[in-house]
Structures are given as structure tokens and as C-alpha cells.
Image 1 (cartoon, rainbow, N blue to C red):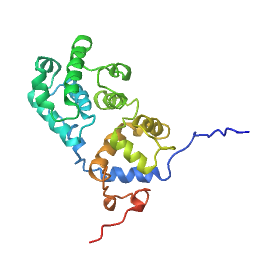
Image 2: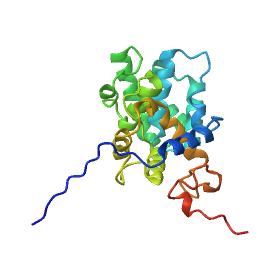
Image 3: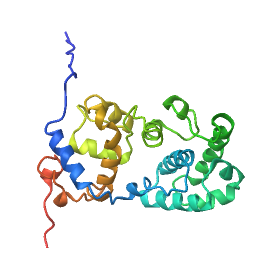
Length: 239
């Protein structure tokens, strides 16, 4: 007879996570990663425009390299990144502005449809709840949670992109291996104090862009080399 054993997840947390977290924060002190640029706005943008920029930046980020996404956002801002101006912009021109972000043709369509919704329902602002954000074309859970945190300063969940998903897996920061970013989000939220939910995404994203790279991570430069399962296996290249 098979007996099902219930596993009590309550109270679980990764070993040494506070030390690891502190070390990552230290490595990110200079805020010099690509992702940090998107948070440095010029004074000419209104609060409403800044929120719109956050949403569009997130929509473009899917399946797109960080540098490519940043460059596309800079072109859009120079063109005039407001709801009404994007609606006046032809699909052809919008495509030229965001190319070569991943699936740029589809994103042109989604951005245009989203802008129309924002104009009709939100006075050219963005929705203020995860539920409403998820109703916009091309916006998934990761984008919605990040948008709430970055645009509205309301952290109701952890935004998990490819960097956070990868790093959480390497550090074994979830009790069980996670196949999807959404599973990683749930895993992290089960133990990480809410006071850290707001900063953890941008902190780990920058860490993933500069040190904990997808391929050939720079374990030799990482303060957590001896605390990370991947870092402990690292060996310097032979000359």
C-alpha cells in the first residue's frame, strides 16, 4: 500500500540567504547595469508618461536582449513616447522604431491596441491593478507585477524574468526546482520577506547582466562563489 507523505513547506528558507543577499546588494552598489538606465528619467516626463514608459519597456522586453530593448526605448522616447503620439504613429514607423526587438511585428500590434485601451479607459494612464494590467494584450504576470512595483510603487508580487528565474535556480532559492518564471515567483514569495520584494528584481537583473551571466557566469568575481552551488564548481581558466 502506498502511503502519501505530506511535506510541510511552512517555515522553509534557503541556507545563508541573508549573507548571499547582502553580497549581491554590495555587488550592485554602483547601479551600472543596463537595467538601471531605465530608472533614470529626465525631468521633462510627467508621472503619467513615466508609468507609460515602464509599461512599454516591459512589453518590449519579452524575448529581447537587454541592450536591444534599451536602444528601442531610447528611440521611442526621442520620437515621443506618449499614448496619443503612438496612436498617431503608423505601424510601419513604429516597427522601424522598435526593430529588432523580439517578435517586433506582433508587438507593434499589441502596443497599438494597448494604447487605444489606455486612451479610452484610463485617460492615457496605465491600469493600477494586476488584474487590469493582465487584460492588456501582450502583458503577462511578470510584466504586471513589475509594472505595479516600478510604475505605481505598489509591490504586490515579485516580478520574475529570465535573470531572476536563472539566478534563483542557481542559488537554489526555491524549495523545489522550478520550470517556469511563474513557479519561481511563487517559490520566492513563499519565504522572501515582503520588505525585499520591491528591490529583488532590479537587484538580481543587474547582477545577471554583469556577473551571473546566462553563459559563462563570472563566478571568479562573485562574492558568493563559496556559497553558491554553481560557484563552488567554478575553476579558473587555465592559461
